[in-house]
Length: 194
Ligand code: HEM
Image 1 (cartoon, protein in one colour):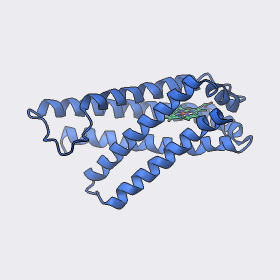
Image 2: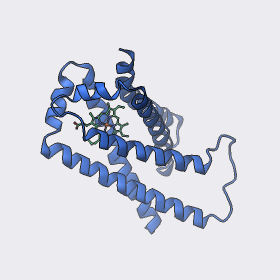
Image 3: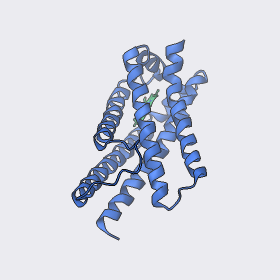
Image 4: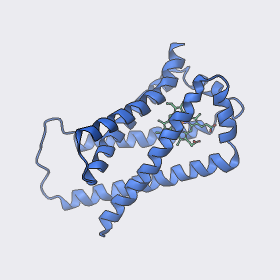
C-alpha cells in the first residue's frame, strides 16, 4: 500500500469516527424537546470519565482528518500538471472548497470553546441564552449548512472509492445528512421561534 493510500485510509477512518460522534451528538441534543431530559443527559455526560475522553477523541480525530486532507490536497496539486477536464458546469472552484472547509473548522473550534462555558448545572439555560442572540443563531445555521455540504460531498466520495455509486446509495446519504441537519437546526430554530 502506498503512503498516499495509507493517508486516505487514515483520513476516512478519522472522518467516520467524527460522523458517528455527530450522529450521537445530534440524537442526544434532541432530548432538548423532552423536559428535563436534556439537563439529565448532560449531568451524566459531563462526568470526568465521559466528557473529557470524548472531547479528546474528537480533537485527535479532527487533527488527523485535517492534517491528512491537507497533505493529500498538496500532493494531488503537485502531481497534477494539467488541470482536470471540466465534466460539468456546476463544478465548485477549489478556492471555495478551501474557504468552506476553513470556516467549518473555525465553527467547530468556536463551538467547542463556547461549550466549555456552559453552566453544567443547567445546560438547557445556557443553550437558550446562546440562541437568544440572532448573531449566534446565524453562526450556527451557517456552521450546520457548511457541515451538510461537506458531509454530502465526502460521503459520496467515500462510496465512489469503495466502488459504490448507485442512485439508491446517493439517496440514502442525502437522507441521512438531511436528518442530521434537521436535528441540529431544530434547537436554534425552536428557540428563535418561541
Ligand atoms: C446546532 C446545534 C448544536 C447544539 C445545540 C450543540 C450543543 C452542544 C452542547 C450543549 C455541548 C456540550 C456542553 C457540555 O458538555 O456541557 C456541545 C459540545 C460539542 N459540540 Fe455541539 N451543539 C450543536 C451543534 C454541533 C455541531 C454541528 C458540531 C460539529 C460540527 C458540534 C460539535 C461539538 C463538539 C465537538 C463538542 C465538544 C465535545 C463534547 O462536549 O461533546 N456541535 N454541543
